[in-house]
Amino acid sequence: MMMNLKTELQKIKQAANLEVVTDGLQFVPGIWVNGKYLWLQNTMEKVIYDKLLAIKVKQEQIQSKISLSSVYVSNHSQKSIQVQFLAMHHFSNIGQKHLTFVSPIEKHLFHHTDHTVYLVNGYCDKADMKEYTAIPLRYAYTDRIWSSIEKGNLKYQPMSKGPAASIFTMSMIIEPHETCKMDTWSINGASKAEVLTLEKALLKKHTSISL
Image (cartoon, rainbow, N blue to C red):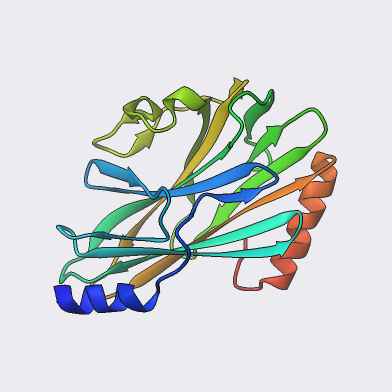
């Protein structure tokens, strides 16, 4: 089983840098399993050997304003496993002044800079977006993002000024020998109306994504 897992990963070797940048906004995927979590930094693939889970990421630049990433998690074990996809977005320039906030009406995350609006959203056919938050960037890779690590609950914060990160989670059960996919995208434009219009165009083009 482990040799098959390694063979599969060898077939999907890709470029090393995973932190996908769209005008400075980076996407960093992660996963939570059974009270533990990890972020995939500087890699396109990861194996959690004790859980027999394999993670890989594919990224597509739809156009200059739209970046689409797909995260695949494969369960190579003989039992069902509950996982949470984690999707973090933040700017590479920690000194950049901006506002990050959760919009409960649109059910989106937004990053505002002086001249640009960034929309962040995601979809998985097996799960709805479960939780989302906006936190200071200094907490992004620490346990301070959680209200309960054991349960996989994010610490909810609707808004953060200055260097910040947005995070959302999606929870699902992955059956034995099943692969689940989460799509996430970031879109930038001059206004909220523009990025929402661009999102509609993205969803129309990619019919496998529906909200």
